Image (cartoon, rainbow, N blue to C red; front, side, top):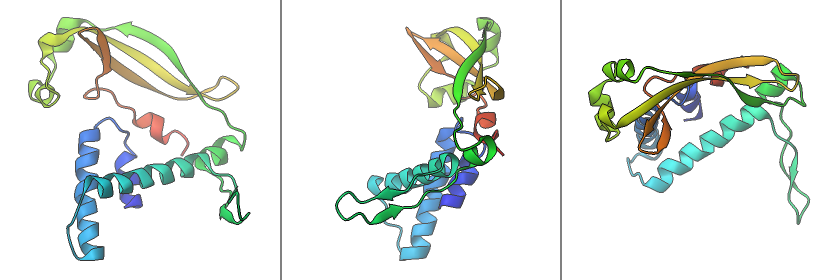
Length: 176
């Protein structure tokens, strides 16, 4: 399941509905293959997903040696993550907003997919403002290693990321 998880998130988390749908469908297939049944609960589903999220995070950031407090037995061994390999063991990333732009509301609304909005239980009429932000990931010395444009919409008094047009894939693959 881990390899499949990495494949799914390799393009970013923008379409998380599809990620969840495909991941959990694959989990049912794997369960049937391994255990011979298709028994599934929320606990099984999210335990598998959380385990893969944790493993993926560790593959990026690396780990330290971990020892049991009582016995002193080593529970985990230090590993070097992809970020450490690419940027050094003491890497540090920060996120910054590189620019902010207003987007013409009427033009934005005209291009919306009303069926897709309906999935989220909203209509274009509820959106009262739109902005885009160029967001960068920088190293400790201020070098921008990647960036993505994030589009946000205002509905009521709250701003939401519009995951129907935001592409965060550059934020997930920059270290390769």
